[in-house]
Length: 212
Image (cartoon, rainbow, N blue to C red; front, top):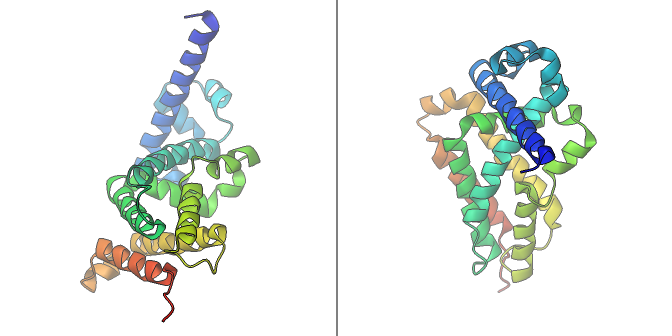
């Protein structure tokens, strides 16, 4: 291993250690209650060294969001089956989204909070990365397009717009659960069942209607 390669690996290791430290604090205290000073102490670094790797708290939040999106991306791609119709794959992807919500709640909250408050505060290049070829949203759009081409999904709405509409609607229900979960408990409504039923309603609207 050459010197330059060794330095690059050391830099990446240090970068991941900083993200790990930020995760511990953000997940424990909440994003608005953690400062760069706190993160430097947690990572056992000087504040100056921390700023060599991340310019702001938003940049660190973004790095955590990207970790979460990588997990979500893997979950939805793992259930994709090229032999199935697009509509069937969308349903399976919905189940993967539910799994992500249940098994990785901290990453889910990180993504929701980032989308709502921090998206415009990171550099344009970073924002475009969220919409890159490996992003869950782009893959979702591609599967919707597949469904429109195989006749299982109505072609009335362009796939890109449809992806945004569905993503926003499903995210809205997840956010409602996060903010009003206690009310649902009092009503005897199971959170996961609510999400599954909402996905069914959305898929019913997506399905290509057969002419009689």
